[in-house]
Image (cartoon, rainbow, N blue to C red; front, top):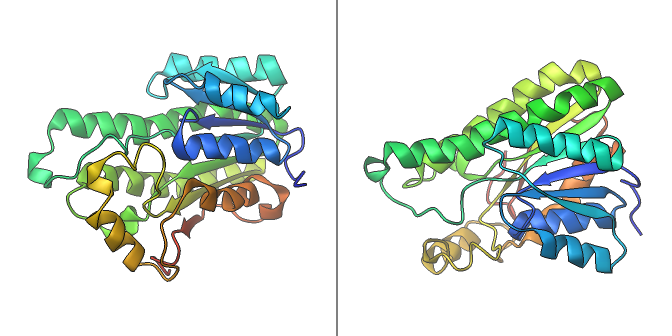
Length: 253
C-alpha cells in the first residue's frame, strides 16, 4: 500500500469528473485527505471514496471567482487544519471545439483564459500563504503537450497551457525559498469521460495522437496518477519548476 502522502491535505480543482476524479482517488489511496473542488456536483466522487474508507470532502468552488477560491481554502483549513498540496486541474477542454483561430470569438478566448490561466493563478495565490506559513507545500499545475507542439485550430487552449508552463517556472522561483515545490504535468490527449463524447477528440484525432506516440495506445487518466503522486510526495523534494510530459513518448524533450 502506498502511504507516501499519509495525512497530507490535498485540494484538487476540477475533481468532479475525468482526470480530476482519478487524481482524487489516486491521492486518497496514497493516504491524503482530499478536498474535491468543482463547480459541478462532485458528491458522487466523495461518496465513492467514502465507501472505501478514504478521507475526502466535496466543496463547490469556482476557480474564476476570487471569493470562491478563498472560501475553498478556508473550508479546507477548517476541516483538515492545513493545505499541503494543490492540484490545479480545473480547465476548459472537453467542451471546446477545434476551429481556425480566425473563428475564435473574443468572448470564447476570454472564457478559456479566465478558467485555465486566471483560475490557476488565483488558486495558487490563495493557498500560498498557508504553505508559506508551514514552510512546505506542493503545487502541481496541469499543462498540455499542445503547448510544445503548437497544435493548430485550438489557439485559445494552446496559449492558455503555454501560460501555465510559464507560470509554473516563475512560481517555482518565487516559492522555492519557502520550501514549496511547483511543477506541471503535460498530458497527451487523454480519454477521460468528457473527452470521449466530444467528436472533435475521437476518431481521426485520437488515431493520429496514438500514432505519434512511442507507446501506441490511448492515454487514460490512470496513466497520470503515478507522476502526480511523485510530484506531491517527498520523492520530488529537489524537483521544481519542471513540466513533465506524460504522453507515451509523443514528446521527447
